[in-house]
Image (tube, rainbow, N blue to C red; front, side, top):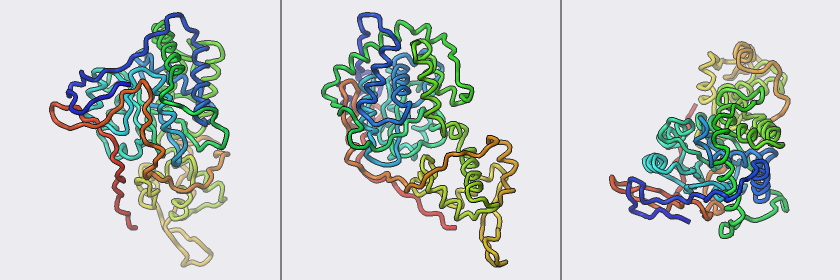
Length: 420
């Protein structure tokens, strides 16, 4: 384990990263990916396709300079206790130059990435990332080669990431494991097997770097725009590895992006889709604003309850999000009596936007009700340091010092409620 000490030089030159020594013998790509995927599946309860996507992303972290884009890896859950920190530690044990921390300043991130190109492993991002525009901007920019902050990043936290960073991420949604579902407990003191796999990945990616760099992989028909940017490195690794991996990669894409395809296009399109589903499910031609926001905040696997720093969406928010589509609330009748009215929307108001932005048929999957996520303190999310990562302890922000902040356990400030 390598630790950044307080008062380290602002240049970052005193921070040393542990690069795995490549395995001495040639390595089969399909075989090592099989072993890495199995490792992930042993330690954490994962959704279908996630273990394969994690194996491919981990391999990409060893050779990200071969690609134009480095997708962020977002490990998120709707509540505490779902294994995000454990999974982050496993990722760190399998990747080179892992920088493991619960918080970091933009200046330090920029300097360390510029000098060392570490694998950024940021935990508990729900507690600090939403309020830090500069840090989010650097993580956004680092998605593409040519940016001075270009480096792989793993972001773990409760709830969805903000829009632009969400668009640049491969999403792994975690849920709490059932009894007996996790096969083994990850022990950060005993990572010999993970280090062997990291060395094997280092050897395979080194031997195949030129092929990976030149690869133009076959992409799924529904993988385009930013979504394709995120998945192309993973598809290229699968294609060069061969065996069953090209098909496994396509299957993982389908399983993990069944809802993410709309999210990748932006919150506006996702909101339109959900509104159309509401009208269709109720079989009505009008809905009040109060009904819509209540139903949006109850949707599982959607980010609405996370909006406004966990307060969920309200009528003002809904009006602002629909304004770019030239859709505005109106006074609608809500009952038989002429005097029963409220602010809301008519189905006809959405006709043009539905026709332009959505598929021809409504979604068949329904979103189930859940409660807004809790983003408070959680004893499960204390740092567990794997062998390889650099661990950030603290810092002092001066012209000569690196500043590396750990979370102090304080609650994030809550916004004032918007009164309608």
